Image 1 (tube, chains in turn cyan, brown):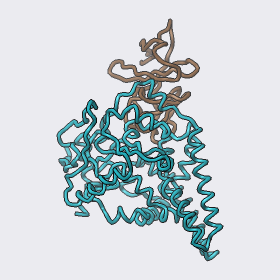
Image 2 (cartoon, helix red, strand yellow):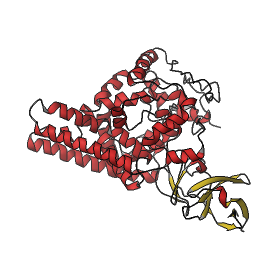
Image 3 (spheres, rainbow over the protein chains, first blue to last red):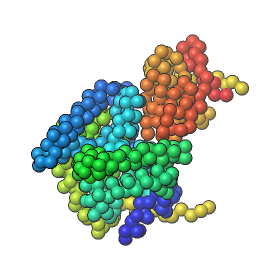
Length: 368
Length: 104
């Protein structure tokens, strides 16, 4: 089962060409009608909100790290490093995401600067993951095409749980860094990273490895874990919230569909979580209109909510659905969460009977 | 050889905006810059063929609505990943309130 499952989700496997043959790759997706004038307002960029939020974010990290260092050696350091770790190892994901889209700031250099920093913190190569996320938006949850499917059917449960503490992601990240530093990509990466971009991957990996080497050398030289607790370590001990947030996006929902209302969730969150997650909880809206910056997503939600299923009122409500769905999919891989649209909403975009969310095996494409 | 086609009226485009124009089975994008100049490019993004008329114009830049790839619409130059191939541009001129583009 494991090998078969991985083959179906692999970008280098047969489902890739089957998806292309079935018209699921690079297809037209449903988008709600929003008047052009209103969309222009919502897409408009500003530096101020992201500068403010980034200053608070970095300020909190400096404060918590400082307090952790001050209390280093006592248990009082634990809560401060826990807070620092979550900010570093979890919320860098949303900063990586928004700046990767280029929507967080109006000024490109601010966007690119934070993107590089957040990519380092979350241990993702900025070039590979820019292209990976581009593909994720083109072919969201299309088997063999989307490299960012977190919960497969059936889910790799042990891996999912281990990643709440980065226990798979971090070793994999170092393995990829080493491979990239040697001037090589994986076959999957080669499927979506164009040749002219690859030298950036190799250069970044060498820089990142050098930073981690200095960090570890400092820890050895000073006989202290502190350098590792500050740099790199948070991707392990502070990564759990990344997964708490991220699994709400698509886990358990339909695959091989062309409508984000069938494969994506929007979840209401409190103001603290929305700050930490930079409004990525408005995920259906983000996938429909990725040009809208995070600070305008609540307004976009008001524009399109009549066309969608009811939002999940809380993280808890989302997980009451996600956990049973993932567990059921361990035995029944045709099961998926299918939501009911609100009365009056535009019907689901389902061009063919095959693409109904169950992700049934597609007919293999034979060479002409 | 030049082939000037009437694409739209000057008032059809807001300042710092873009509209679609179809001619001869081809899609074009017509832009009005913040200072009132008119420009024309291919209508589709060179990355994944998304219509640029749904994108965002910021100064001299058009951002694709699908993956946020950016082009300088005055020159067609692709400004970085995920767009790596420049857009084709077309000369424009305005006569008596009508915007013409040279599709020749």
